[in-house]
Image (tube, rainbow, N blue to C red):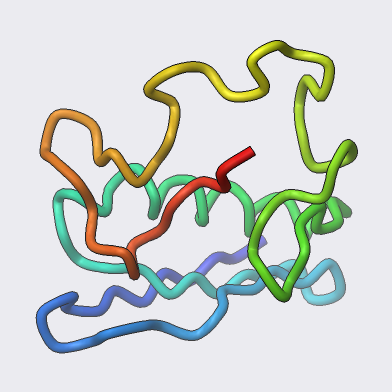
Length: 107
């Protein structure tokens, strides 16, 4: 399996194409932002695309990029559904991420 990660400067690039992983060919292409604050979102995308060559399918709505309910959630019965502070748009200890670097759905 090969995964190619193409990093883009967030100061020069507003958005990147959708990343992809292909089961046939066992390869993935990830478009990522070259910024420390993008490390966690980049890691999520890389892990996500690594699963496609292994046969995983998408569990989100391509129109909204939000997880499909219930199959897109690890624990759809959890109350509250998302843990407090678990939203990616908070950006962790480095402050908020720019909108284009990703956010979790409001559910």
